[in-house]
Structures are given as C-alpha cells and as structure tokens.
Image (tube, rainbow, N blue to C red; front, side):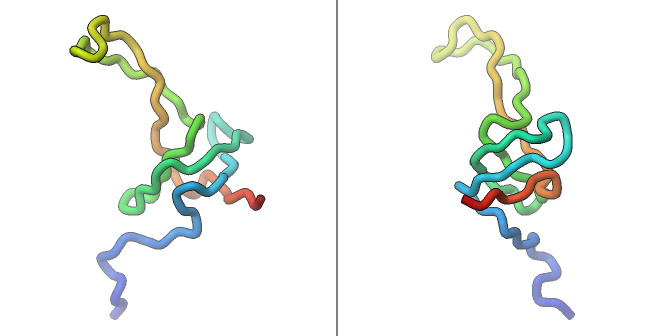
Length: 83
C-alpha cells in the first residue's frame, strides 16, 4: 500500500514561479503563480483567467459594483517557464 494514498499530489510548480498557459482562452499568456491549490489540482496565476465579480456595497466600498479577480486554472493547462 502507498503511504500517500490520502495526501494531495505533489507538483513541480510552486508559488512565485513564472508559468505560461498552454490551453484555454488565455493560451500564450504568462504570469506569476499567486497560490497553489493541491487538493483540487489548480493554481491561481496573476493576470490569467480574470473574471468580473459583482460585489455588494460595504463600508470599504459603499457603491458596490464589479471587480476583476483571478480564478483558478488547472495545473495541466500551464507549463513552467525557465528564466
């Protein structure tokens, strides 16, 4: 039996690495890894897979409105860029 049965997989891509998107709508873009989500096998890359998110009015943002946030992208859709 494997000792890693219930552990998340290990990746060669770490936080702070520069990666290039090789599949999807943002193909060809490069960016820095902000966060690695090993349990769901996804990463969040700066400037890639940005979506518009509606936010309700709060004390910090009394008007509410829309903000742009980066959503996770599957780790198989990126490759590490050397340099």
